[in-house]
Image (cartoon, rainbow, N blue to C red; front, side):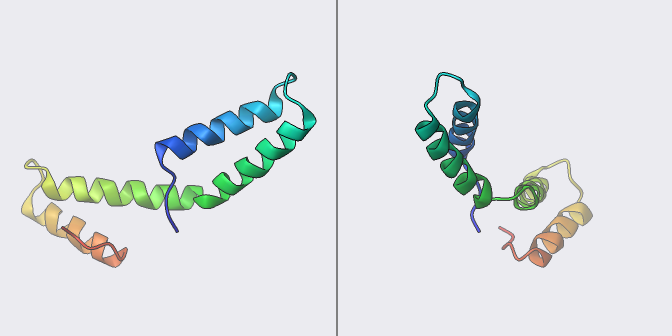
Length: 86
């Protein structure tokens, strides 16, 4: 499953705002609700957490302040998560 981009997160915020705006028609609110559900089902919080962990591990591998042991640990953990270590 993919991850939300910043653009998708902005769309989701807009749809949620539309569903609570008293000036938006019921038809538009229903459409906004449907689109928000599509976007929110796209990536769960667990998926988002996993992506953040992967990004952090990749950053650790390229950070000159991280020890060789730390880099190996990050690489091993990435491999366990099914992410190729670069």
